[in-house]
Image (cartoon, rainbow, N blue to C red; front, side, top):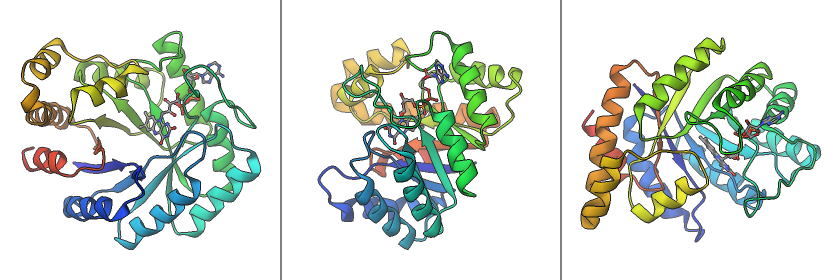
Length: 266
Ligand code: FAD
């Protein structure tokens, strides 16, 4: 199965640690490494610097990009720079509301508008986000899938999902997507849990259910959280592979150790 790895720009600016981790992950021959993007565009220059260095490692890279707070001119400039660097993929997102309630809309309100723009202006292959349990702002999963369809019709070519811990949610989602006549690859997003607090923080602004058995184990054995998280991810990935998924996208949190253990055991 093909794998991809998501990393974020290190908050302390120390990129050498990140590159050590990427060098380790490179042995799994990833289809791509994706680099997250600050919702308000604050990390744009740093992102470009990081993208260049990831390319220097001879890894395929997929920058994430959000349209919040950005004008058409800024977006066009950025995507042109990316394309000129030889990058072929981009993950087109809207971005989260700032402080949870305000949408910072300039030219594009929703991701489908960004997808349309990138599709018109570049030849980049465009990934979009999908939410197996529905996006937090969506009134229903059906309405969220209508939105996904708009992103697909605007020119997306792959769907990367939000993390999930219940494979059945993913299987049902893919079925509903296919029923909606969306036939693009759907790449499941997997988080090997590293810390209970961090996991809770990541899922607090989203609709992501955590099976009771997993939560109980994590709470009961605080010293073994990484081990439990890794084992859970191994089982989750095994089942996904058996179901025939075309790839798995790992939220690495800039660490290679757990992802390596998962990949060595599936
Ligand atoms: P959209 O597709 O625009 O959807 C947003 C909401 O609006 C949904 O509820 C949708 O149903 C609704 N909607 C869309 N169109 C309409 C319409 N016409 N009318 C009414 N409602 C509508 N965020 C970052 O800031 N940086 C990152 O690097 C990043 N990486 C991510 C990677 C993955 C794999 C995923 C799953 C998410 C990532 N995010 C990232 C988070 C993402 O920005 C948020 O989830 C954001 O709130 C929604 O982005 P979107 O592109 O899915 O938005």
